[in-house]
Image (cartoon, rainbow, N blue to C red; front, top):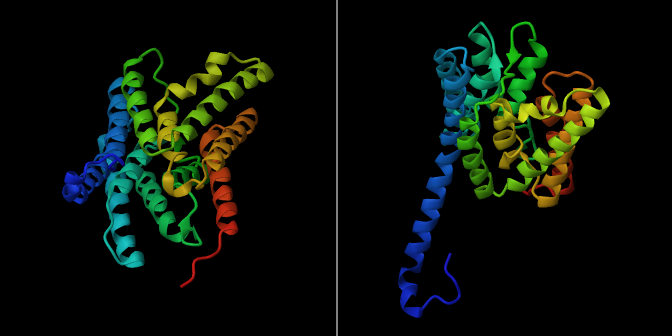
Length: 280
């Protein structure tokens, strides 16, 4: 973006420069989230073996991409960039655990399908992987479990992933969402430790795990399924942490997923109802 002080002699090259800058920003940001989520997968598996097998990763990612291609062509009538489908597939392969293969394929398929089926006024309401993972954990508890591994004392994955992740959410203008949620989670963890008598470190420890890295860096910051105003996003992030706090007090194991599942779509629907419907 050129400044007001740009010399007249440079104006001929301004459109080309602006186009180049726009292309570079789009190119950089398009591939940064897939690279980050791949790092989370590799760091988690090499450190703690978080994956059931690499076949489940291939199955989840492949199903996610194929579902995206088919539904985009059938519903929208065009081919779509598969970065989002890749992220969804990787998220599914990390976040659910099952001795069988079908849950990975089904969860990936449901996650992508929500983008085309569960819509309100032209927008999908749920983060795809949050819906798929929550649905599987709630409806198939005897076949599917969630990931519950922390990094423990191994700090090097966090030292790599968190700085990169925070830079990416900053570039996406969603840093305030991540920051609000983390601060709220820490404060409410302290309150929860007072209420339950549990150790504060035990209550706050989940933030060090790959599950929460995906949740904080990808799910709650999803630009498509977050409200449009900055103040609204801050409020929603706090409400997600608050609902999670209540669910944890009531011993819901997968509280963060359910909290986002409940709060995010309601916030989106309230915002969309206030807007005038688009005219044909």
